[in-house]
Amino acid sequence: MGRSSVMRFLDEGAKVVIADFNVTTGEETVVAATEAGHGESVRFIRTDVAQESDIEAMMQCALDAFGRLDIVFNNAGVGGAIGPLVETTVADWDYTFDVLAKGVFLGIKHAARVMKAQGEGGSIINTASIAGLSGDGGPLVYSAAKAAVISLSQSAAVELGADRIRVNAICPGFIATPLAERHDGEGTRKAFAKAQPWPDYGRGEHIAGAALFLASDDAEFVTGEYLVVDGGLTAAGPELSKKFAGASARFAKVSGITKGSTGEAPELRRL
Ligand SMILES: NC(=O)c1ccc[n+]([C@@H]2O[C@H](COP(=O)([O-])OP(=O)(O)OC[C@H]3O[C@@H](n4cnc5c(N)ncnc54)[C@H](O)[C@@H]3O)[C@@H](O)[C@H]2O)c1
Image (cartoon, rainbow, N blue to C red):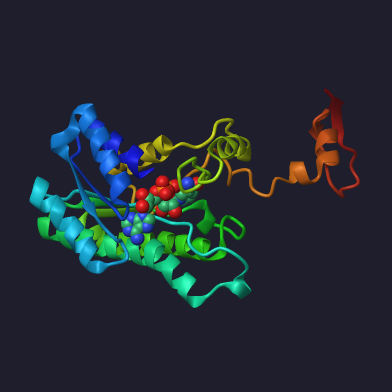
């Protein structure tokens, strides 16, 4: 998602600082951007988003290289703690929250400081997840941290609105990225393509497009929102038609009106 967003924002004319823990993949993205003709518009700084000094350095890198800061996309993430709640250690909880929740808090805090000082507003975008919207949407601690990202985005939007600093979250569904498809890329992509109503698997470019919209002036009146980008996965809800397959198969063969317990007969026609 990060790499797709870097390439998309560069194509749209932005100047971009890539801030990532992983120097190898970060530098690969710089090479890809340079090969695409954007060498002058991209920088990399090795960053641990859970460290406040690293976040400050990341903002300063943008100011030093490009003179100003208009958009911050807090997108770094890990799967973090997995396994049953009763086996989850405090250390694993802390690591997960440090990267996913504290990292976003620090990203918002220091982006807002710079943007307030500039006095021309800005757009802060935070990657949450559909995992933060319900139980069983992801590992327990990950889900809790992503719910925190949604809440942080809303509270920050309220506090920073007067400064014309917009704060929004994106809730991706299943997106085929290295994080999601570590063991079996092809198998994961096939499974993801079947996971939601939309027939193709989610790609980083889908998230980049959503981030670009939230960063743009077209989203001027959009703040404190979480944008679900999941191919209809959450819209499908409890999927009763799959769980009660017999009833739904019967309903598929008729059309008309039923009148519940009124004592009046349904008016149905066979299809
Ligand atoms: N892939 C999905 O299905 C999915 C779904 C919902 C949300 N998300 C979220 O989307 C975001 C992007 O994930 P992705 O799927 O592109 O995964 P990815 O593994 O391709 O990218 C995540 C990046 O975050 C970096 N990172 C991890 N810890 C860091 C730290 N402490 N400091 C700085 N960088 C760090 C990694 O090095 C990596 O480059 C994450 O926040 C993730 O939780 C992913």
